[in-house]
Length: 344
Image 1 (cartoon, rainbow, N blue to C red):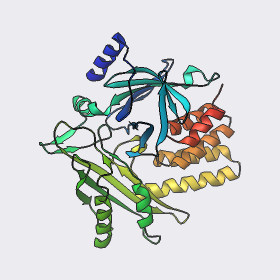
Image 2: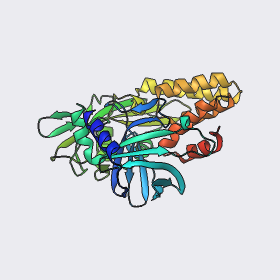
Image 3: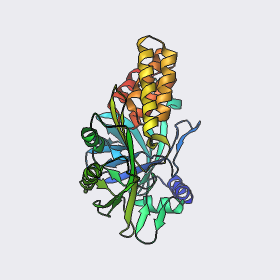
Image 4: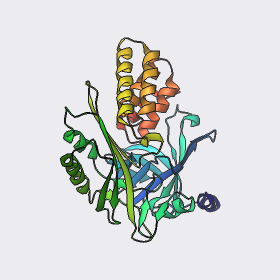
């Protein structure tokens, strides 16, 4: 943390000059309540960090190491407007660090708003290396984690779902994509692929090779190859078909990978929650949604349903916290819920 602390001291000594965010990428490394009451999030090498990519007029947020759809943004009077709504005030902006605070309505108190510290993507390598978060194998290969990782700029999960045959058994596939510094795919490796035929493995390999050019690779001091772990889970419960795609498997938080057994259990809890909600058994529904999310934290539908259940139970703070988490991941529907219901 020495790098972060030294930069914060510099920023405390002199306010940064306003500058454009265009063509920059930022990784969120800390979040705390605006009133300083508690730390909401502190990044570690195992966490899935939220990243933001800015072009001249669009902002992308990453979820599960994949960028979501762009949102229009602009900066006026040191405020960041997202989709024409004021979302953040810029507290400090330097070449290395961006510090912003959420903007709330007149009835929203500071204990519901967060201040975020974000690190410029150009400094990710040095920051991760200084904190011991990089595994460098010789001079040619970096095993990436969620602190330092390329971002996939596409919707690969949809392609996997189209490929996944309806009658196929529940299966998982673990492997790694090795990337060149320019974002092209250098190699694809599979581990223990016994449950897949040679034809299926060839088709999946070809799909991964076609992701060349769709990876945003962070700046590197030398032309390292980058190894990105992945896990695919194909699950059919009889009620639905589901594909989960996780990069950098083994990390907690939103990036937690699922075995086929876990994905099936998560879907079972989800169906239990829906049935309980329809019967107005809200406590039971909330408990089942929580169990679903505890297993599959990438299930955004479960998060939305849990928030609504919380609200109906008279737990608005829990509902707003859940919507706020989704909003921070670029979910427009959640942003609307926060604006409508999260006022004191």
